[in-house]
Length: 596
Image (cartoon, rainbow, N blue to C red; front, side, top):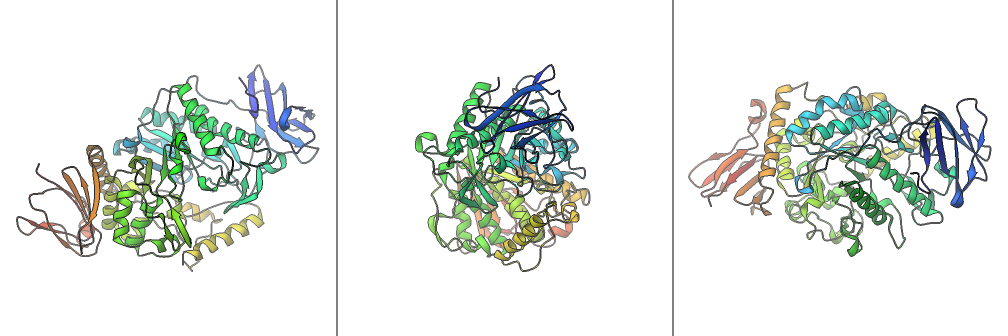
């Protein structure tokens, strides 16, 4: 059943299709079918909608013409015949006969894996990614988080410049490719969460403003015009994005959504868009007998995004806790520019590991104002932590990964802190085997003005972090090509060792799930201690060996296990000098067990 206000092309069977578009800026709208068909005048409905039912079998190309102007693709296209400037296609709305019985794991058991389809394999398609999914499931990954897959200008893009938000990228494999990917994941016990962008649209091929009041001139985002969630005609804009969220979850059997930069959905209404959307999606999940994972990406340390509606919250399931990354990265790399200037000491690492946040309402030197809120009352699994992601890696001049910056030994120690803490961890693709290929920022715009703007904006961002060297050209094809994963083929023994190390950490994490957690710093030493029940994890974050008084604690595991001879010889390893004292090597994680 097609609901009021539902937009797009709806194939009805027997070669009949119902078309509806929201175009309050137009006095009349024509539907153009095929390359030479006569225009068909659409019938006006209330609130600026136009619709018509006509003969249009699957595969029909179509466009809309507003007030006799240049034809445009459908803002709710399910597929495109060419690129983001060309016609839309009539295609089925879903690819499964019945809803899956698959249910994603609880947050307490969730391990996220962020994946960009275009650089995950040489082919850059959903189908080519399938062969690697069993290995991820065997490691202990539970949930794949896909970077956006909606159509973008060109064929090289992270996905955050989407302009056709309902259509799956053809170069990735289109609608059917996405559905096959999700079904294969489910068969392996993997959930799939999709990144979606509701705070801005890309700068090229963005025609929504010609149809209706999709944008609100009262606000502006770092990426361009702000969408209209609280101005005149915002009810219809909200309906458009609500329909988009349901489209991904229902038509592709996805298990959840990660919402990009939620703080940049500018909305001063009494009923915030995020709360309205969350509640509608949760209601729909109940109707389907499923559960959806809703994740907010934010750097505001604002617990309202995961608070329940009764507490004036947005009712999402989890939110990013970026301070954890910043504290660990800043200390280990020595970087202090940009937002890293608020970080850099060991005490902050202890603070973020115990509470999830460094900024809790105090003054931020970077922002020149008080910032953040207390998060310690939020259950730890609702906070998502990571060492790397597409932004933190790709927004560097040359996309260097953390292991390339600090080395394998130090990287292993930080992986231990990430995975043995109670927060929900997220790994970035390739991190599981120590990938050293960069992940750079890349685009393939065709509008010269947009290209100049992107290059200028990119250099300005790098300068704000103190990087004066020119970064890789985002428009160059070789920039994207450098980012394609090797999957450990260049150094197979090292890759196998890193996978084994990660798998062991994930097993510890699973075994310790119900233990209490507390982090502390050994005085005068750069050793962070994670206490989980009868287990202790000692992380030496210094470049020097340190001595530990262990008493009756028994050694269980060392991060140096499985290192190559060259890497192991780069520093000392732990050793027991007498019955009570153990020397822990530089950049070593040592796990012990107390006798109880």
